[in-house]
Length: 145
Ligand code: HEM
Image (cartoon, rainbow, N blue to C red; front, top):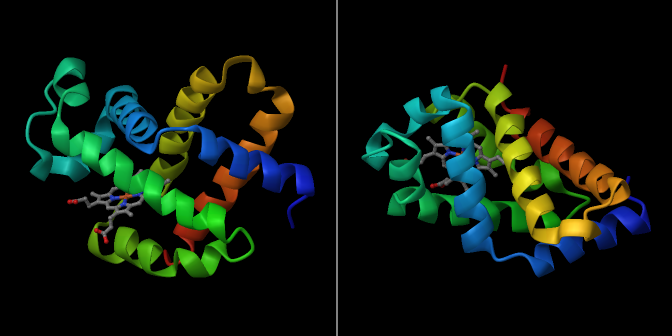
């Protein structure tokens, strides 16, 4: 259950940010800070160091894809589990991604959003964003057993 504050805060964040910029920054940060996450992206070419990761066009485009998937959750905040049923099955069965990695990407996204929003990223806004990520992550975990 979402409060009015949480709903408006999440919608506001997603309306203010540039998906291409934030997606690229958050995803590349995840690959750099948690280097084991690189192993799922063997097909993305050169991820040899931070400079290679941040300039890799496939990292940039996949960052945007992730943000567009998050937008679907924002647009239907009461049905995030249903929205992500297929995506959860894909990450579990086909991609075999360790689900502990989902929140690691979430933390990277939080840092990038915080740096974009500056002072507007108050503890209350952070709490709402964290709750949104927790629901996203638990929905993505749903098809794992
Ligand atoms: C692909 C979303 C986290 C690994 C995808 C796709 C989406 C997506 C929308 C494309 C699916 C398609 O092509 O049908 C998300 C979201 C995440 C998340 C919303 C969490 C907030 C992760 C994490 C990892 C991961 C943490 C691994 C550490 C992959 C891989 C692919 C993929 C390997 C396939 C990429 C390719 O070869 O094009 N993800 N993802 N995902 N995801 Fe995730």
